[in-house]
Image (tube, rainbow, N blue to C red; front, top):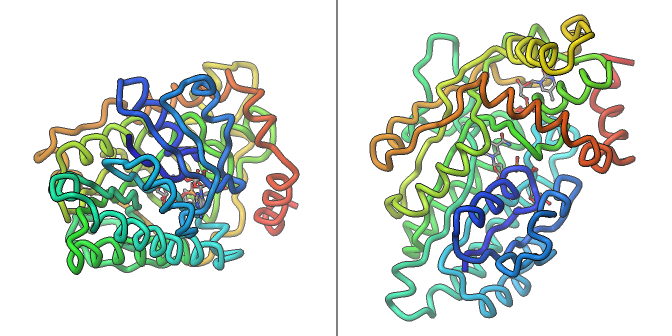
Length: 352
Ligand code: NAD
Ligand code: TYD
C-alpha cells in the first residue's frame, strides 16, 4: 500500500490513475476535497478495490495516524497543497495553513508512526514530497536554469509556502532521519487540470469564444511538462531516488506565455476549425510580483534515474486539447458557482 495525499487534484489524480494502471500497489488517497479536489477525476476507480478514498486534511494528525495504523503504507507521496499563485495573492491564509502547517502536522504524524516501525520497515519507508520550481524565484533571460543547489528565493505567498514545506522535509531528514525525497517540478499541463491555470483556462475560454486573458505583455517564460511525464518522474524518484535528495523535474520546453497561448489557438484551429481563436487574445493587468522566467536543469534525474519526458510540448498540448474537447461533462461539473466567482474576482480589472 502507498498513501497518496491530494490525489483528487490534477497531478495527484493523474498519478493515482497511472500508478494503478501500471500495476502499482493499492493506494489510500487522503484528500480534503477543496475547490481543486474532484472525485470525478477518480471515476474510473469507483469499483476498483485497489483504491481507498479518505476525505480529510493532511493537517489532521488523528486522521493521518489512523490511516497509517490501518493501512501501514510503505511510502507516502504528498501532493496535497494549495497550488494557485493568483489565489495566494488574493488570500494567502489557506496556503500557510495547508502548505506549511498542514505539511508540518503530516510530518509529525508520520514521524511518530515511522519511528516505532521495525528496523527493516523503517529503513524501506519513503516520504516523497512533491514541490515546485517556483521556490527558486525568478530568472533573468540569460540566467542558467535552476539546479538542485540553486538558493531558494520565493516571491509569492504560494512559492514561499512551498519553500517552507521543502525546508521542513529537509529538516525532518537531517534531524530525525526520516527517509525523505523531494521533487521540484516545472509547470504541468494535461487532462484533469482545473481551469484556473493558464493552459486549461485558455482552452476552455477559447472553446467558449471568451477572451484569452494574457497577463502583462505575455513575455514571461515558464518551462512546461506534460503531467504524465511528471507522474513518471515521481515514480522513478520513489523507486530509485537517494534518500534525503532533491530532484528537479522539467520538460526542456521553455515558452513565453504568449507563445503558449498562440500554440493552443493553432492546435484548436486544427481540432475544432471555423473560428479565429487568436483574435480572442486580450492583454490584461499583470499579476503583482509576476516572476519573469522559470527554467529547470533536469540533468540529475536524467543521469541518476534514467528519466526523460516522453511528450514534446506540441504532442502533449495536442493530447491535452483533445482531452478537453472530449470531456465537456467534466468541464461543466467543475464550472461551479465558486469557479465563476473566482473568475470574476481575478479578472475584474482587466476584462470587465
Ligand atoms: P491541485 O490544486 O489541482 O490539487 C491539490 C489537491 O490537494 C486537491 O485535490 C485538494 O483537494 C487537495 N488538498 C488541498 N488542501 C488539502 C489538505 N489540507 N489536506 C488534504 N488535501 C488537500 O494541485 P496540483 O496542480 O495537482 O498540484 C499538486 C502538487 O504538485 C502541489 O503540491 C503543487 O505545489 C505541486 N506542483 C504543481 C505544479 C503544477 O504545475 N500544477 C508544478 C509543480 C509542482
Ligand atoms: P499559472 O498557470 O497560474 O502557473 P504559475 O503562475 O504557477 O506559473 O500561470 C502560468 C503563466 O501564465 C504565468 O506567467 C501567469 C500567466 N497567466 C496569464 O497570463 N493569464 C492567466 O489567466 C493565467 C491564469 C496565467
